[in-house]
Image (cartoon, rainbow, N blue to C red; front, side, top):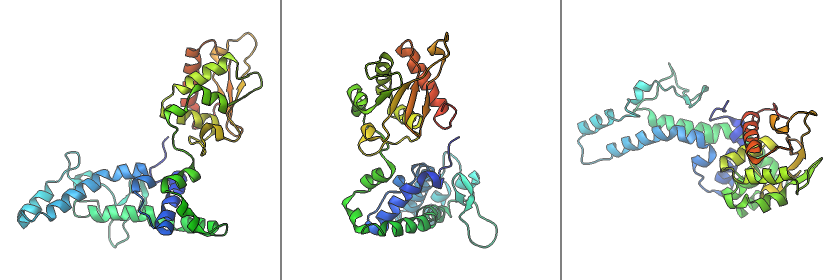
Length: 289
């Protein structure tokens, strides 16, 4: 199950980064970097708000024409009022944004501006103020916060959260062979290890993130990439019951030690099929630990 787009457990570090930059470095940070999913949810509202503002500032229209044009604005062919959108964080109705008297209004073309501002205020200020201040206070006890000016927003985000993705060219067979460790039945010269490196180097960026989450518990790598992972990604032989084919078993992982337990599959096609299935089904739980 995918987490809601405003889930603090997923975005708190990014929010902290952005708040620190806003208040310590005095740099503007796009909201898309704070919470990409929530930013995408706001796109229709921001679009209709900009259209409304453009109409209101159009000196070539009469007042009646502006009112008529605004009333004709649509979101996917429907009036904003007809969508019955509550005044709350998208995807999280338990986070109300209406603090006035009376019944909570629905978002309309008249209130879309105040709604967008309320979402941004809740996300960038209200929800982040306490943890950001706590983080800032703790950081200040270690060193002068002004040292953060040495980093760009992207660099500090990577330092705190790890790399979001690794360029395709960095996932080469020699790089992976140098970064991983083999133990308990495997060496780097083992056939299965060679097949594994070929398979994971052919993965897309999304597949690589899923593989990392399955094998290490995190979809992000530390600065320095796969070779900087500590403990290193370790490939070990997964023993199967005597008389049974390894092809019938799935790989498993111990994320605390970054262990990938790999059966000695008969060919690359079987390894790819079993690994992709295990990653897809097991990356969000301890089903294959």
